[in-house]
Amino acid sequence: MQAIKEYLGDKATPELMAAWQGLYDLIATTFINQEKELYNKLGDNEHDKGFVPFTVIKKDEVASGPTYSLTLAPQEGSKLFDYQPGQYITLRVEKGGVLHHGHYPLIEPCNGATYTVAFKHGNDYDQNAIVSEEIIHNRAVGSTILVSPPAGSFGLVNDAKHHLFISGGIGITSFMAMVQELKKQGKADSITLVECVRTEGHAAFAAILHKILSPGQYLILTQEEPISKAHLQGKLHPDTHVYMAGSEAFLTMAESAIEGFALPKSQIHVRSIEPTLRILKSLDLK
Image 1: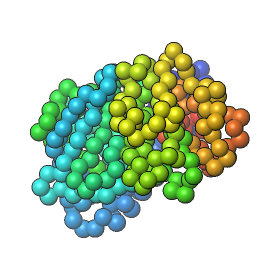
Image 2: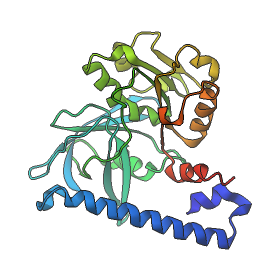
Image 3: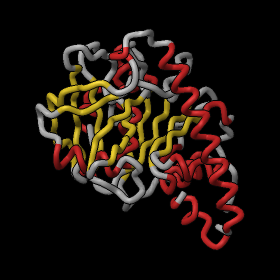
Image 4: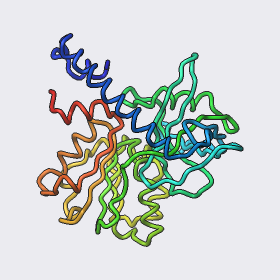
C-alpha cells in the first residue's frame, strides 16, 4: 500500500486509499483461494504442499551488481516438481522473527534434480530485496531455505515462429530457461535477445548467451545507449512474439520502443518485477 501511495502522490486521498485497500484485500483473497486449489491438486502428502526444505548446494557471483545464482536441492522427504520455462519459485526466509517471501524465476530448464535462481543485491524497486539480502549475507552453501512448488503462467508461446526477448537488469532471469529450452528444441535460430544493463559487466549470463546466440541475435545495451525503436529495426516481424521483463521504468521505455510496429497485444508478454505498480499502470491512474 505504501508503494501505491507513493505512486499516486497528491491523488492518494484517504477515501481513495481506503478503496485501494479493499481492492488489495480482494486480490489477496483471490490469490489465496487459487493457491488452495493448486495445493488440493497436489494430493494428501503434506510434504507436497506449501514450503518444504531445500539445501543450498551452490552460490556464485555471476555479474557486477553484484548478481548471484543460487542452486537448491531437495532435502530428504522434500519433493522437486517439474516446471515450465518462465515459471518461478517462492523462497521463504525468517529475519528478525518475521517471515519474508521472494519470487524468483527458474533460470534453467527442468532437470529433475535441482532448482536454480538468480538475484541482485537489493534495489529499492525490487520487491524481493529483503529475501535477496538475507540470502546474500546469511545463507551459505549447506544452509536450508524453504521453497514453494513452481508457479506462474508467464512462458513461451510454443507455436511462435520468432521470439524477441527484451530484458532490463535482473529481468534477464525470466528468459534464461526459455532461451535454453528453445536451444534444446533446436529452435535457437528463432531467438533474438536484447539485454539492457547498466554496464556490460552487469550483463548476467552473457557468457552462456554468447554460446547459444550469434552476434546478430544477442544485443547488449548499456545505460549510455538506452533501448529505442532503432535497435529493433529488422528484429520484429508480423509473427514475432515479444517478451519483456524488468522494472516499471524499464518496461515503459521498452514498450515505447516497440510502438509503431503494429504488433497485436496478444503477441506482447510482460513480466514486471514491480507487480503492484504494473496493476496501477494498467488502470491508468496517473
